[in-house]
Amino acid sequence: MTVPTAPSLYQPTSLDDAVERLAVAGPDAAPIAGATWIMRSPSRGEPFHREYVSLARIEELRRIDDDGATLTIGAAVTHARLAQALAGHPALEALRQAAATSANPSVRRQATVGGNLCARDFAAADLAPALLSLSARVVLAGPAGITTTPLSGFLAGRDNLPPGTVLAHVSVPLAPVVSAHARLTLRRAGDYPVAIVSVAATLDDAGVVESATVAVGSVEPVARLWPELAAAMTGRPLDADEAVRTARELAGAFTPRTSVEADGWYRLQVLPTVVGRAVRALESHGRDRT
Amino acid sequence: MFVNGEPRRVHADPMTPLSGVLREELHLRGTKAACGEGFCGSCTVFVDDDAVASCLVPVGLAEGRSVRTVESLADPAGALSPLQQAMKDNDAVQCGMCFPGMLMSLTALLETNPSPERRDVHEALVGNICRCTGYERIVDAALTAARAAGAAVEEDAS
Image (cartoon, rainbow over all chains, first blue to last red; front, side):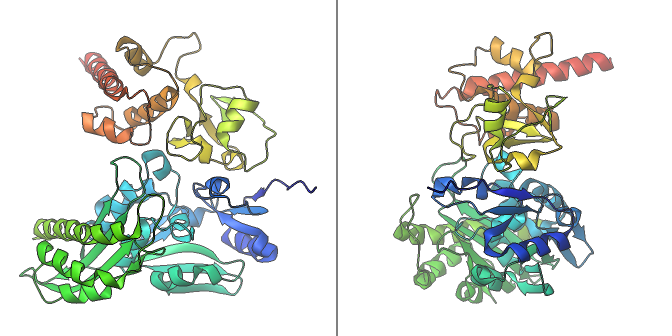
């Protein structure tokens, strides 16, 4: 009988070192940041990797930089720090809400932005739809250098990245939008949401939607955009009741997942209501802005 | 790592949960290990300035950092912290399983928000589950401790 070796932990202080170590180790190794998802691998019946390469001591991944046009968020920034930093960015309210309300306070102090986007079986991640609605891009560091890609493409293809790829930063354009995030949990405290909706929109002076982006999380296995609903909202005044009706008509576009928390049909059933809550919050943020 | 102010060297594998190392290797049994998934809050400790679920912290990531457990709240002579005293005075302790985690989450709240509203206390305890369902007396005690600390500050200032 072979006794499995306990996983090791490598703690580099530079991104280059992390990339190199992961590239050499190949599929035996994986990055780790806040560890909240990976530490629960045994309870999901998943074996640990042989080695983890920590991003926690890489200074550049712990920073949030604002150059006036883009907010660049390091992968190792925690939800709690992100929520705090976004208090001064009303346009990014969807992201602030997502970071401030996911999981519970102690997990938010530990779980990171990068982990939330890279945990491949975590369908109920809150930051994913929030960042999708804000047209975020991810900056990937790998053996071949740095690449930047839209978050939607990253989420769809994250299972097939070459070894040594590290999600280093998320960049969010600082556009003149209003945004909101709504999540439905079955109980108030700590539950995974059954459905998540994030919406961002630009409004003209009369409150008519010039452009909109809608993203949905937790309904399907991977968060995704809902372009049909966004198109239906464009060119009209914000109207939560109308958005609920349209969402009900268009919800057939989703193939919902069933899990221990909720059946697929239930997720689809509540989705329009969650859309309504997000748009209602958007209406109120829009009023605050004027 | 520095545990309750003392440098400690541990031998566990780096991906061992910190909660297990505190309990089994350092014999600090105040930290409870219940759900092991970050949902119940019974293992909450401070790592540097953050109150976190120690069942989800690989001990390797705590290397060189400061860890504070419930055993650090009372002073070395055994005098309870004002929060602990308020819990005792309000008769808020029931079976004791969730309690060390409750104390650490509330200590974190009072360090960042010395004058919390009832709602702030509820939000701070979202990740601390009490199966005795003794929440309201715990919340009362936390608010009593905050008010007492506020009164003491005002008295000092006058």
